[in-house]
Length: 454
Image (cartoon, rainbow, N blue to C red; front, side, top):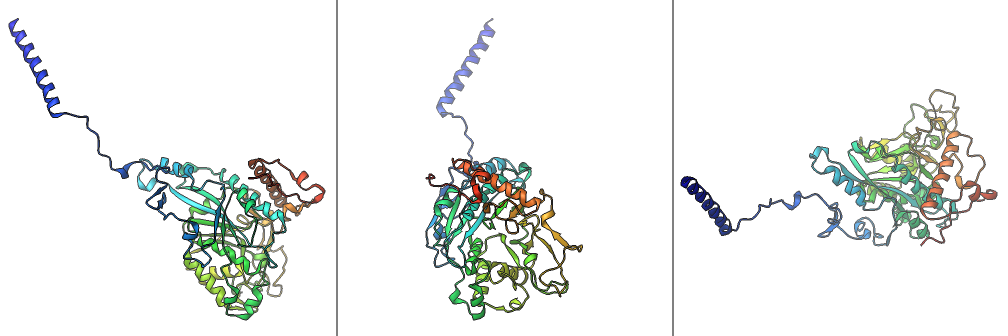
């Protein structure tokens, strides 16, 4: 019994000794030392640190970002609400959530995309006398919003997209309130090609009467200088996005993508003809690049445009609008760009205009030829599901209030979708929705009423 008592006293003494040692050394719970760069990125916390945003870019006004590009870069830039908030905490948060705990090869990359339009006025001046075109810019923005929501297989895509609508606007254009209401970031820029600097008098004379908008159409070149974005998809404001087109931004094998406008090609289109068709200026996909911008502007200022053979005698650009974007961008793609840096897109899928044309025509019929031969292309006859963007050129403008939408099924469906997106836009703005029957009463278009929009 005394032996057991002795053992118990020894046990108590050990406990007391250990307790004393713990107080002596002030033992604390161990806390792992986690480096700050190992913590998950919080976009709300890292929005702006030491003069940089969450993408590592210097924080400053847009005029500062463009300061190296143009003497007019100090002009005011206005920012309206966007189709997707920019910068989009939702998109960044999705990327961060996906990337946590993943190896580098499986992490998603955030791509910033601008869907841009240019507001140029016309050859005669800067007044926007067709309010339908203004509303169509808003409908285009709404169609981008609609199509972005149609993205499938999102979990397996290597990229997360942040999309913003951008309007490149000449300083004399005055529709800022409407563009802001429609969700555009407004960037004010002057025409980058100075007519007074053009060295060739013949080209100078032809340029100021070329195409729809003369030298003002060169405003589209500013797409190459939008360095806030990984990609810029420049569309005309009378275009419509029908389906999700995210796949265009996942291909990193080119820096400039376009569609040819075969129907406007007047070269004498035989198979042995040199040159190339004009680019259709209603769709250009560009990766911003100051070198490309400068190269094209310098080409315009040199002005080597020749009667009958176009740019530098290359048989490129001798067509309607060939002195501006349609011709000079085709010349860039075929004669100036680095090999493999450009890509031709299918015009019946991207930039469908319901056109019918032949890629090759006999020399004796350079402007027109029959469509019954096997090499004819009929974008008007493709399945609706194939077309991803639409451009109202061959088909009447929806705001023209025509009872006949062009005679083709694809024209009818695109027109119906335009009116659907217009009502979606009105609903988003808190306005009364007006269908075709109301907005085109007596076949006269009634613009979207923005008077009550703050």
